[in-house]
Image (cartoon, rainbow, N blue to C red; front, side, top):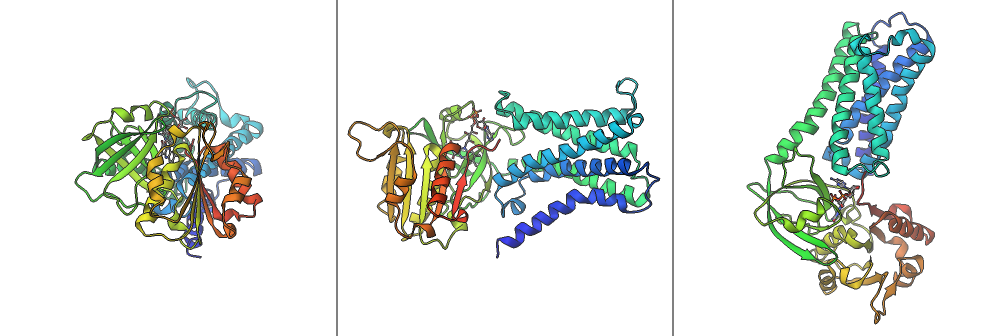
Length: 439
Ligand SMILES: Cc1cc2nc3c(=O)[nH]c(=O)nc-3n(C[C@H](O)[C@H](O)[C@H](O)COP(=O)(O)OP(=O)(O)OC[C@H]3O[C@@H](n4cnc5c(N)ncnc54)[C@H](O)[C@@H]3O)c2cc1C
């Protein structure tokens, strides 16, 4: 019951924010309309701008608002809300084009009124933002390039569409409506200022210092950072943060990584990072003493949200072990006695990240550890191949349906394990998963 109320409140806040600009049309004298299609076109236009404006709130990482859902769910919602916003804005344009073509005026920006060109450019920018986000990988757009372009184009599109509405002013001329519309505009501008100026500024005031960088198995590194002149942060085991190295929080060069250390020792934050691309391949060159910025904690992938389970089973592949090791280390320090199971899949034995640390944790926990290797050494007697239903059934205890499951690894593995667990009769609410890929 406790978790339900905040989520419902935030859903209501969202609905109010996206419907208010349309409701505004009903306040004060309605101008002599040109008919049903005209009014509908205006209504969907206002609704579209409202949805797009509130998109900035969805990615503003407001901790209280994201906590009931998990920030990854908010990001997925952001993605689908953008499509809804786009459909509404397109409908605004489409209805006018079909029913009132004269109202659109000339297309040529040299002769067309500035506010009409602004509206058209905003429409095109919204479309580009959405296409490049939905198909970024297929279009081979580098993540960093995409991120900067996304922020600039989305901001420009919103400001241009607000300018378009202000100058058209068809429904916003009445003083009360105009005042409310200005208030909305200010709200959206403040959101942009919060996301792009104030939040990075707050991070700048709380720097961290790299205190250790050491190599791990499987082309990975563990990086330790400590707060520099401030108390730092507290996190729940399994959560993650956005880490910035060799850049300021304004640089857009931040990457999400799970905390891998114990939540009982938040004064030293640890991240285990696998070399995968441009940024992660530089971790080995980072030196102690360098500056870091940590924006977190975020995420709901944590045993601390599932405290009453009679036992936990963790299923990881590769570097997906990071948040799980954080949970195991925390449980060990808390003197946990409940049964724990860890299924840990890797390509080969030498590349098993944090292998020795996990082994050592068995001494302190009631932990059954199952390694699964795709390419095992010749004398390997353990499980081989992929994690599947029969392996889970053979290993888990009889009361497995009451356990809570935490899965972290590549999407195909995560989906296959979720399917297996559901087929075994484990309720969906007991299966939690984290995907290391948001966009
Ligand atoms: C919640 C979460 C927790 C994570 N925890 C860990 C962890 O503990 N250890 C670990 O090794 N990896 C973790 N990752 C993955 C890690 O963030 C990416 O591997 C890393 O950002 C890749 O950056 P790159 O420039 O080296 O690689 P690239 O080759 O540039 O990118 C590879 C892919 O990673 C994603 N990516 C790149 N940059 C970013 C970014 N700034 N923000 C979000 N996604 C990005 C994109 O989908 C991109 O296509 C986590 C990801 C998420 C979402």
